[in-house]
Image (tube, rainbow, N blue to C red; front, side, top):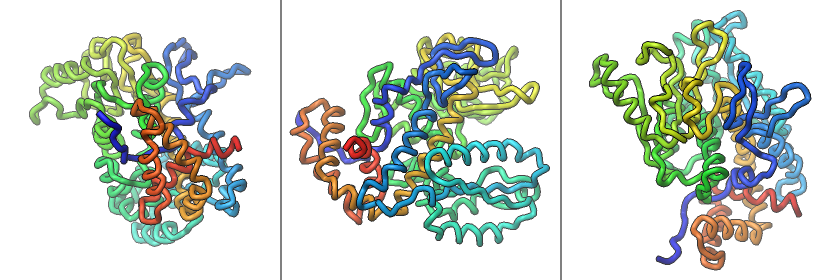
Length: 448
């Protein structure tokens, strides 16, 4: 069969990430006094003077800073100053409100990480007495402000605002070109359909990246031209169906050729009734089939096991599976974080994430990265001109990516690469194609 033209997205930062020699995502490190092996590292961990192998965040954020500094070397973008572009987070709640204490800490982490990437962080705080109309008016200003690359509301709101403001309606007014956290339902819909879009939801996108690194590095999976591992031939279970994690994750995995199971939820197998024996049987039957488990249940009232609060126990896991656990629930004493997977079950997995240092840092990193891309969207004409000035590099890189994925010679992909280049530079095409192309050629441009 002859070569078949590829028409999907091509480029991005992951091709650089997955080939980076410094990045070793499987590590051994202590956590809560125990030594864990086969851990997928979302962030670099430091203990005294010992630096553990670099993780997802510890590689991408400094690279974004290097790329930010290099932009002035590109004639079409020499006037762009990354430090003038802001990642805006809106926090609603009183300072003495314990319900927003965790949000406050998370916002601080996002702010510090954003600054390390070369961009600026902007936090807008409002008391719990703020009205929806006041937020609508401010949102209109933020949507028009070209120095704000992306913006997001930190949910849930605290106090009176949390009870009275329809946050779904509010988030639906976010300009989708600035919807870096995927809170606008238009973004969610485009993501679920696999349609052209500016952004993906940060947590599911980060989870897929962590799994992709493992599949490409350790399982020899093919790397798609869009920088995601092919999940072809793998049965993948999604546990959880929230609007911004489980549901979009389930839908987008189908676009990456996965055989998707689930999503599991409180009514799986229950027929609308509380039949825990039937539920447990179906949960177990599905999870034992899964080559990969993406878990995002969070705190749950299931109590399907008489002797543990965890959802996944050892008898529910397939030997050698991959576990990407996004849940962090503060159960029991309210201090220690717990995921969905019982730690005593991890010996069944070939690799897994921990409750801290795994998906959380990957989510923050993805958010900052999308802020960086948002800056490019605000300067899309300059990005397209930079691609035109470096056409030979773009076409050459595209040919390599296409030939590697299809298993054919580069000469067979030349016409396809030319077509994808024309799409990237066309003012009539979605800006995502230009930004993807620009990201993938930056390493070549930086090497001169």
